[in-house]
Image (cartoon, rainbow, N blue to C red; front, side, top):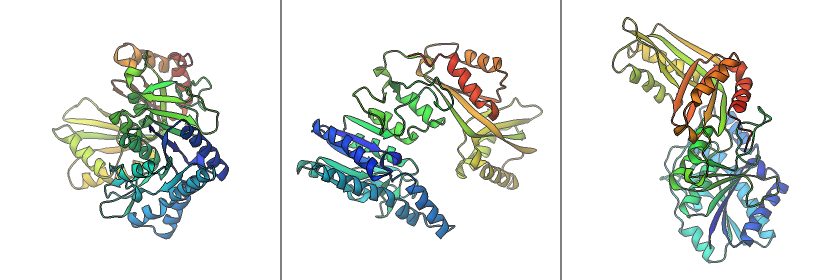
Length: 411
């Protein structure tokens, strides 16, 4: 039988009624002749509650026990979903990560998937099981301990299962009905996309769009897994949602497909750094060791052997970045006059695979911002993305103006 993977997020399984609704969707696919692997998240709010309990119990907790606690939410949902399907006379059973077994490395709380053997689940399919309900977000380390994949890890679990089992498709059910040209809460003209290329989705996810976890999109692109993002709360058709697919499956590439943004950005500048070989490594090495997620990097023209180095990072990592850089200065690895952090900025990005073949997108973007009186602080580009840092107070205006400029409301 062909295999279909269906993933239900926390809002989709938040109550028993919602679990029943999700189970009915699974039953429809079983009736079509699929063997179905269902990946479930914990019920909405449960993981946050469990994380809070760990924090209250132990300030400096053992990450192995953290994983043991926070993974339990998915176990509950998997069991309830399997019971609900059984009540519908659909042969189903639940699977925890260790039972599959979903093998990961030993990096607790942010483990990476290494292997998903298919023998155990396929054997049960051969015996008549129609649905394997798998607890998302969790696996087992080489030394037999429960691991978790990091927040949003159930998306990654779903894509990994789709790749391992050669699934026809991986459907991600969430509280939105697809991928939009921008956040509908910011622009009323935002339009749902029927299709989007893997690369575009990866950029949007990494730039602030919350629809899919970045690692899940990376996996899907690597293994060619066709992803479909759907709403759990609306009637479905074969054309519902947004299909995330290969670039060649999209008939026409617009220059810009979406406008992404991130409010929680900070701009950090090292003033008067020695301009010498290896200075960039001396700066960004300690930041990497401290786990700082550096994005945009700009180096000014050197004058009298000194230069300024600017980079962006999430606002909640500013303190750690300052600590790492000051420690490197104290050790004599780097020398700078001052370290300035601006935490009142936002990042706005235009994304589109059509940029590869169409010129003028950057000029159009910069003119639009200029016409609105918005000053650009930092610019970064890639083959299919242009990102700028601006004052946070202009975020909504910038998103709306760029959405209009590139006529993203038009099909």
